[in-house]
Image (cartoon, rainbow, N blue to C red):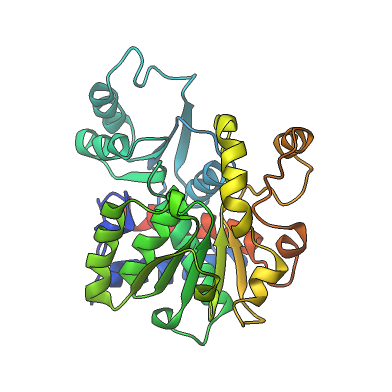
Length: 329
């Protein structure tokens, strides 16, 4: 099958076929190999890319800036304090201006409707760097990492278990990615933080066609046979008021050595989108510990173990984003 994604936006994996996602994964691997060999085709020479950030980031910003630079594009960064986007100028007006200046726009923020409206009004490809309900560039990098570390097992036989707050954007993004690629996904967490039913229904509708399984469970028995244990932080900055309740609900789902052992797979991968609270070396973890709350979603023992591939994931963000930019810009 010939795949042509030129001019498309990357808002959610739900917009793409399994064949198109496979194309992006294969292109990512090719570009990674070329970089390690010191080869760059500079496919985006003469192109310009806007990075529009309403929510701060480390990996997403670095990945887009490096990826664009490697391909010869000029990259401009705007955050919420350095533009009039949404303040003195409407989203529609800003998008139309951005579309006159730039060949592509990356957005990282909150509401999914913002990234959709940017694509609607700008007339150029728009790339979702994270919203409250999705994180498609992260999932692309995560699937690439799984294939690198479990090369002899097809994706349709891979089981991913997400532990913790299964209503968050990473859990939802994983549902969409697994549904598209025919994988098994288990959202493992408390009933109080279960995925919204409409999200489950949407993912399961796609899963019915791909052969995927999308499961919500609070039972440790569903950890058995996992190839990947995934988690995310329990409370982001600005959610400090929710920490006491989150710690109470989510501590039973903390990723520990004992939890990994329940998979029955000594080679199970531990994955995390980062940043992670795995020790008390951050201001937030320290301050919450002083208040009596252990907000670590994973133990340091697991985070630093041979099962952990979190920094391979982080690197692969850049390679997969580079593939998205090349394919669509």
